Image 1 (cartoon, helix red, strand yellow):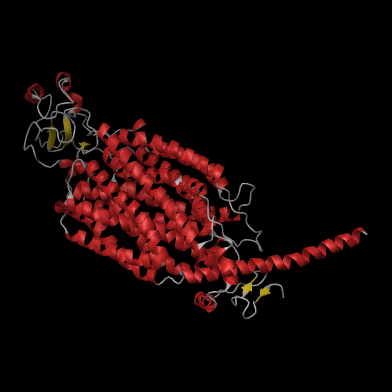
Image 2: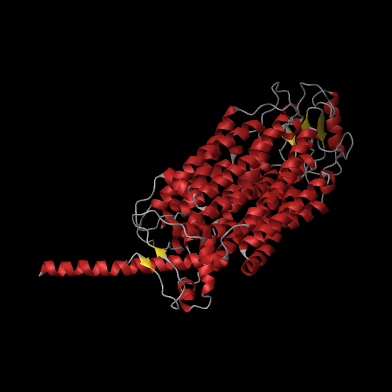
Length: 636
């Protein structure tokens, strides 16, 4: 019958292709298909089915598709730490309230993500099925990014309830004596502060009165509502409604095994270019606005939102979606579609390694600021953070071409599994080093090694997933990139719960206090230019408010009290930053190595898909001729 095609011996590989019509599909064995391909390695027919059906993607198409990943990554690397530095430390949102808001937003977005992916797969318009979602939702995402990064327009950190703060009673004469260009010598300023302290206008630097300035007050509930609404819309319009169709579009651009590695390699390069852009710009604005983190984040939110709009406009104009064959049957409802997705054996094994790997890659990114600030106790944490991340990203750029070359030579899953083992060993060694000894050399050496692992975790899993989706099409007759991408996005979100919410809750129950209980300092700008920090038992009077400015009272080299946390909090950040990623990378290595789809089996999958298309075309031609003949006969 025309629905079955079986080549004769000697005429090419014995590939059986089933055209999915009204019966349930049969899942072919990957090992059997690979064996069939190996039976005729030199068969011209088998090579033509695979090698000659896909053209090499144009460099302009790859660049236009990959470009939006750059501002997306910059925004991600801006907002993720801004939850800590802006909302929690600078504005006083409690760590528990933020953890609950993040978990609720991501849980609500989970179901919406599945609906969006299913809707995107079923959409048919003259512009395609992915690009309309990008065009409609990306502007909302840009607006949410701007507002989420600019809470300083509407909120400020509250002072203690008694209102008798150091800043509100400061002598105007003393404030006028601050010379921002001179951080080491300020004799006149010190004399003025001495007189103000003697007259009780300012409190002594070591006052321990419970009603003194520096007792942190709770942030208003309106700040939590502002953050919650915007954070939910930010995730829904961006990471769900824009990024899911965007990722699915990339998987549809080509079905060639090696071309996909090239496409996703370039996409990953743009992704890390975005991270590098944020590091460079962030370091620049942090130097210009050293102690004002609100201004630092606001300026970057404006710039990256505009850049994202330009990049998405380029994609919508320059990248054409591949034409899709009409579906052979109506799409499945949501629950059967998810069950069908989970019936894909290679995909289940993919999830087994993808879940711990996602957690391992997100935990260090989420906790590096807390580790530097509260475990290593560094006041100017931003400088250390930007240098560390710059080293990671530079190593990522160097690793991407090496990984693509290695994947071509040894296979994607083999390279990925080996990298997981190496990363597990590196994080375990770093965990054994005390945080105080990690400054400078050890921390930066770890960052250089971690960059290679981060590149592998971004480049190779996407290419492996695209191969698995081809296998699913062979099984079901449908392309379901959107639904698969939804699961990927939701994995990222729930890994975010583990990577962000769980450590925050553990730190909260261990006694965490924002800024160590201080009202300002460590990046949260004080209202007086001669304060480095203002804490319940320590006021950091200094020549200026800049990091490293000479302290006028007490031990000049003492650690900033805004970096002090209970020992349990410090251990919680250390464990989740280093020990848990080590365990997760080790858990991911074995299932990554055992993934069943290799380059040989993928060629067999593509060959069967091509044979199926040829069979459908052959079956359609006689039917079309019969209809034409009937029409001619009827006209006669």
